[in-house]
Length: 202
Image (cartoon, one colour):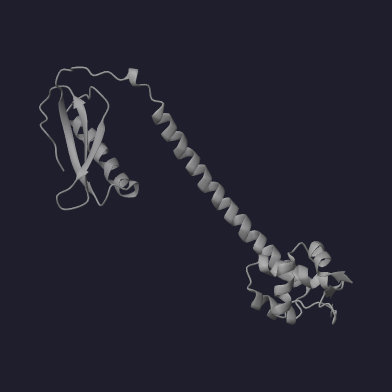
């Protein structure tokens, strides 16, 4: 026989928890000393305690645990339930690891922006350039809305410049601004040599 303290140590639970299990009828002591009120447990009760803990770890309430144990869940059934819980936890860990990778990538981006040397930035006066420009509208500034709009705009702009025999003199750029009727106005343009093209819009 074990005292409640010894039984708690063997079962790796608190004495307070064992008293609570006794109070709700989930795990009663094998014997209670009528004179002292001391609770005594048998070694065989450790098996039930282990099942209680395992079912709690699966997310069952104590009331559900009691119902399951009273129906005498087999070791094989309990093993299957634990394996299911194991799979759920592994999936959650995989998802958490993916999110952690995204957070770390964002942190690296922010840190690299913070280390950008200011002495590499210079303000210069440049001669004016003429621009060929196309404008489109996206539902929002979110990447999933901007992507389908900006790609075709660049393709169309490059096609028109090529058809007109115009050679761009610098990289193309894009900027975004709120559209009067909602959504986001996306403008792409290319610096170009003087030619017959005037401002292009769509």
